[in-house]
Image (cartoon, rainbow, N blue to C red; front, side, top):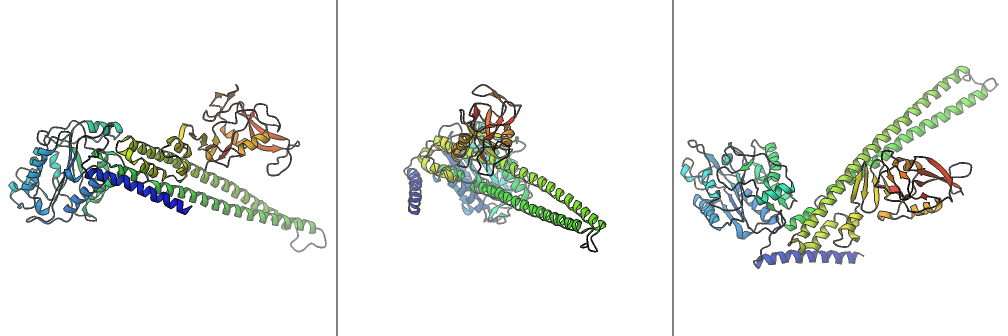
Length: 606
């Protein structure tokens, strides 16, 4: 078995390697691999990137993180998103002169096409002219007082004008002092990010800026070799799992992280006075490999949540055991008092009576027994109440965990289907499927690509109704009791022994621990507010997610002709319990009676 698993694992690794290597080979041959746009078609334009980072100034104070910031952004964008080295400009330290920066902007104006997108990142000194009150970038060779050697924000915006660099989308990211001057009062409210918003953002042109602060100095100190701003900006890009990411979605996380760790407030808005801002936004396109990795990213969290629930159930069982031990101790003490009282009663008035054998002694013992009996009753009530609270909390947590589990599965499947809908993604179908099912060990038996079978195995719900969840595998979960029911009864007349056999041998949903329900469990389904007509005519009162072909359902309780319950004994019995969903009646009839009676399997939903 181990050798088979090893061969399968090696084959998977080899196949994934071939897919990835073929992707890189295609790139080397000049074949352009394009992302899928939010609108569904392939993106036709290119993604351009200019990064500028300056630490070692000739006359200004040296910075500590600017070059690292620029390179960290370059690395995350080229590794996880659709950027390539053919559309990349980099200027660091001595290369980031005024002439080189402006020359690069001029080259971009010549090379970037109208269908392209451009991201510019600047990390270095920024300064505000005390005379013009205009913010500026400070090139590496600039002096402290010569404003003509700086590159004003106005100069930068001239190149980003729609008549200069003609890209559909431009995003300027500036990690420097006084960068808020780019906006000069033009900043809109962030929209709620939906698929429709992202689609509109892609279709309409944009000129946007994200700055590390407003019109104030910003910190050069940071985290692990990066500024505070760049740390959170790059981290947000690393953590993203969405195929399409826009600044409105990215920015709140960055702003919150920076504001909590530095006295500066990042800003996002449209560039003022450059044209081309039609209400769109820049779009980051996550590579297929990154999307595949995102399929499994939440597995550990789901497992941790499950372990927490198991620990809670275990602790509840231990607490219940301790409470029961205390009750048992009190019961033993009462039994001992009963024995002492009986012994005293037998001695009173006889020659065997001792000094303590008197009516007063007996009264004291009786009063002690009453006190202990009251304490025992209090303990039992306390235990019942505590157990009720514990089980209610566990049930609630299970219901919440189930809702999150279903949402996570649906998200994983949706991501997988989006990958397959992409022209590029089709080449990675095997790797995508393996990444998807790796999150769910029980899915190993499902044929590759059989989403319906996977949904059935993972109990994805078809519908919900007042605490009931119907799954595609033919089961219905009652989240209030955590009982799982078959979605329909056996469908025809059946006597009690055959109904019992039917329930115990039922294998719906792939489970093998089905059983007959008790009358109380059936009564828990009964709901006069809900009504539908059974297949054979009578109205039944329960959720429409569980379909009955007739109103009467067998329960597990069995009786002899004297009415004594033999649930726990292997004794020949003649009667068994029924529950009527037309009236809520509980009755018992001969076990051989199969007239309109049905079998409905149930199991624990754990």
